[in-house]
Image 1 (cartoon, rainbow, N blue to C red):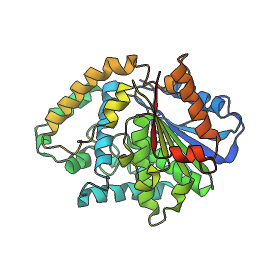
Image 2 (image 1 turned 180 degrees about the vertical axis):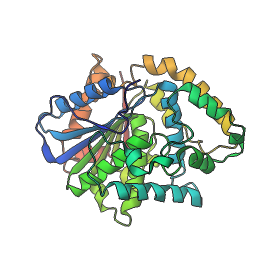
Image 3 (image 1 turned 135 degrees about the vertical axis):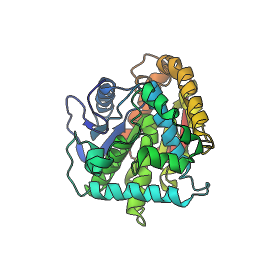
Image 4 (image 1 turned 45 degrees about the horizontal axis):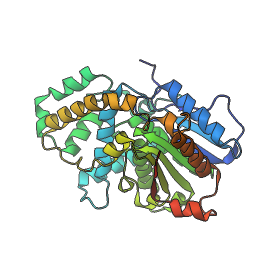
Length: 341
């Protein structure tokens, strides 16, 4: 187990020169340790060398695929309740406002790159929730609690996470913090994420939106690029959907399966739901590790396949050219681009 890196900042090595008013915030996906995200950041620095950005990686620490997948499902369930087409209850609105309140306090501070976001956001007595989803044993102990089957989603989220964002609270709060700090610096922001990192990105954008309402003009300086996407456009704030481009290989079965999970609001029996989720994790375990079309290395052009190289070329174009001034890029906004062999 690596030390606490969840929600801390990594940068490319060596650190390249960059344009101060262009900033890339990267969030890694499931089963990605520090070394893998460092590789990804170095690769993004290579792809953007001709038009360098400031690159900051928000580390989404892995606790094993089963725990990472459970975090992903919980985050997607939270996002589903933010859909404008879903009738929101008061508790859902209250949770989103609570996230924004946490962020409002965080942005008054200048946090170090290794700061523990939860320790700063709340007093010690409420930092530790009943479950930190780090091991299958901890998850199994949670499932054994008999009262879980009587909880609805809001009750469960409150029990497990308190006022913290569901799924992966440290990287979610850190990304939201970095977005606001980037906006305050007048930077053009590129939010680049893989797999579970897109769930974290969507949640962070909802939190920032809630904090800055009624102002929404800030979103005009934000671009979202997701590769191996496991979310739908509806998971994002509506104003950012047209400023987002997803990149997915046709045979990326992980992205295809997880992005299309729409019915995550069914929590009538949480124990049954979680048993299914854990079974689902077991089924996907081998797929995630062998599905070359879902790995970050594939999308970043670190594979010799032609589709991998095309993916890297597309990412390079998206990160170095002006979306508004380039008609072909403007036409791609709000699209999911499918790579073929």
